[in-house]
Amino acid sequence: MTSPSSSSPTEVLFYHLEQQTLEKVLPSLVEKTLERGWRAVIQSGSQERLAVIDQALWTYKDDSFLAHGSAKDGFAAEQPVYLTTTGETPNGAGVRFLVDGAEAEAFTGFIRIVYLFDGNDTDAVKTARSQWTAAKGAGCPVTYWQQSASGKWERKA
Image (cartoon, rainbow, N blue to C red; front, side):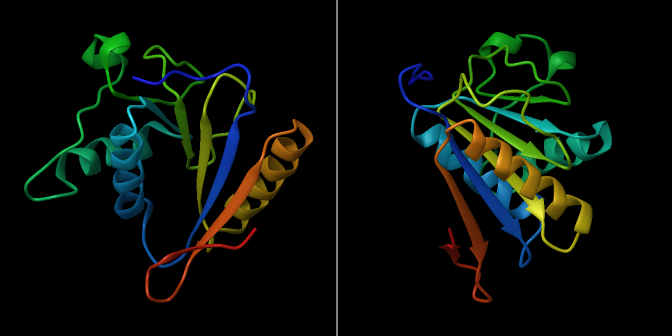
């Protein structure tokens, strides 16, 4: 398992959702994270959204699921993917996913921080812009990804 490096600045990625829902996009990004040998934390702005994400990670494919847990499940330090509404990282995750209005408390201690935001929600776009500015100000390399009409992710900045 690869752990966060203190010598490299945290890479911050912004995924602008327009063509697909968070529940469709997030599992594939988490799957790629785990394939790289990294653990993940998914931080949501609400318990309700976290419950939906929990279900999506179990059912996103007919023949597979993404093992994960939260404080209520116990064994937090052993979870490959930990779900929370706070800034905690009990599993030593290298990647933090921020969804549904969750914001980074700091831009250190991770390999990547990944924002996923609904491009049809003006408040979500405003929050993403604010976080972009904060990440740039913290000296983090930032990238902005938007989905094309065909569903392919394109780097826009």
